[in-house]
Image (cartoon, rainbow, N blue to C red; front, top):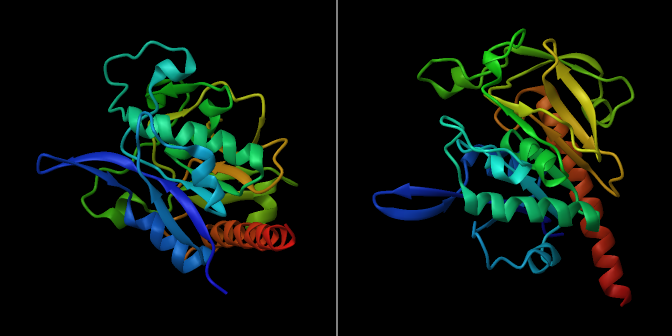
Length: 257
């Protein structure tokens, strides 16, 4: 049986004077090797993408992290110096893709920038430079040259008992993760339930309350250590299971039509 396919919205990058539609390798590797699914990288356009046509052809949506931030105008705020960099084409692609995937019951896993996009897509807001707020830790990546050091598992989060995330991870309470970010959820979207927080209260995981299928976001980076870290692997495996179940139902529905 062929592997199911998940949509992964691209970032816009400038390389050698050319515009690229790109995504970090760590996400497609985790999707293939741990979730057991293939990824189609969806080009980022400010207009022109037919979201339902894209979703008709895939069995899940994986929304990655990025070096860019969601533009504050999308959650009712004025952009300030230092809020960027921005990627308006990524915003215009990811936000409607997230909304329609949830509406259609297509499995969704949103990571880092992805959880922030999920919150904004459903009506929430974001806080910038959270490390400057009283009582908030510095969640930014460590200042080291090696990527393994940047993404080191170094911070506890507290997963709520009985939550979706606890079910997918197979455990609740304190979990060590690799969360590295300078933005975070401020006002939680009405349709989102907080599933995990850092000790300083920063929201680290959410689920969609009325979702018809797997629909969660995490602020940390399970994709980076998905092959070797048990909780990271468990989350990607749970996503892959949901994607395969959706693909199987779609195949049966199409066969019966």
